Each structure stands twice: as C-alpha cells, then as structure tokens.
Image 1 (tube, one colour):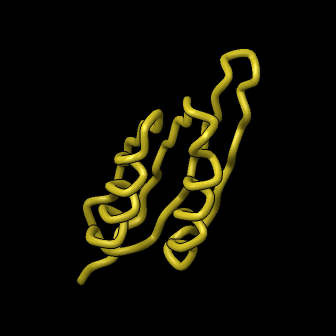
Image 2: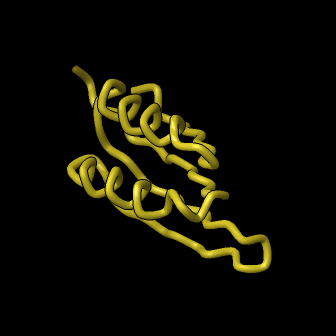
Length: 81
C-alpha cells in the first residue's frame, strides 16, 4: 500500500476522554511524525494537531477510533500521492 502524509486535527471537548485520546495516539505512534497539543482553558477544551505518514488504512483506523469517542471531533487532510 502507498503511504500518504497528512495532518489530523483533533478537538477534545469532553475532558474525560483526554486519557483515551492519548492512549490511542501512543498506540499509533509508528505513523505519527509530530504532534502539537494546546489546552484551550478558556473554552474548556484541548486542540491537538498531528502530522501522520502512513497508509490510508492506518490513518483511517486512527481517525475512526478517535471519532467514536464522545466529545471528540476529528478531521484529516492527506496528500494525493
């Protein structure tokens, strides 16, 4: 399978799921190139941006699992090649 490079934006509005999000990201650490997390205390949420390098199946599995968590929104943008 061809690998793609992309970015994944994650917004965590439910603080109870922060630990689950971090565990998922750790389990997919092999496709994560970089990560930036910002706690937005005024809005009571966390915003995480990750750069990924993996197959569409790997990236889709990660974003799918994240998206199933209550209070977590996920969007991704991938290269075509």
